[in-house]
Image 1 (cartoon, rainbow, N blue to C red):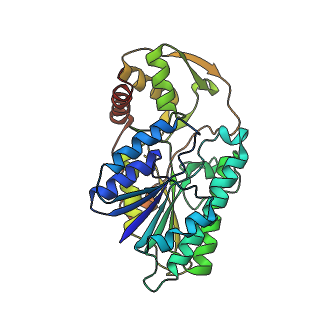
Image 2: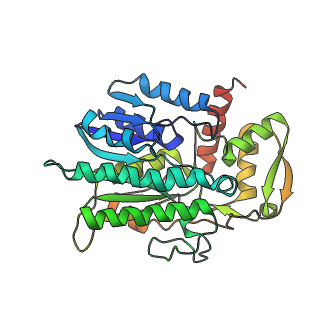
Length: 329
């Protein structure tokens, strides 16, 4: 049987697909390879996957209804879906909201329609796991963030689309019995990460001697979560689909490090890894940002065995080493 991985050339998608291939799974990967950031990085990630046996890739935009629907007939062995394709980025959602509508809303419905068709087959659909985000917590100030808390006060359009995605999946679980698990990721970082994320932005600026933009004068905290810990949680969710015990088979979990880090302390770790001081360019709080993220992982620990182990003192040097290797620094 096979697993469909959307966003397979993305940061989390590549790592998750690689882990699935390593344990002998057949993986059907799709990705639009768009130019939100340098497609060469996506191609380099993809090359790692294509070097492994059991991997098939198709350049598909998940908003393309016909192309996605055709996957059911083209790959009848698909019995699980790992849906990680999305338009990411809080600040970019202020500039180009329609990119988020196409990918995070239209694309979400398109994938759920595929899941509905697969679930209706005699052998059914074992489960769907999809990416949500800590951004759904928005203006919520009760820390740590727990999945039971209200998430109806988004502060970014990106966060609003990810919350809408959860609600859409809930309706499909209720109407069609699609077993689905949503994962709210908390500030994921590591090798092969995205160029618009702070580890990349700060590392490149420090190495090149450029100032780094620090918002809210550095008075922020983030629950930085290393990619290997995230992948362990993703695979556990795939392996433990929810049952329809006392409601629709849909569960949502936090995947975070459960250790929020002050932004200036985080920058200090990057400085040590780069062996060079940063030049700080202090700015006020940006629209769409939140002061602190902090994951309550009791539910994911209980149900999925999720147990992150990587502190930034270990994870950041791994990223910096990869960055230097990738760019031959």
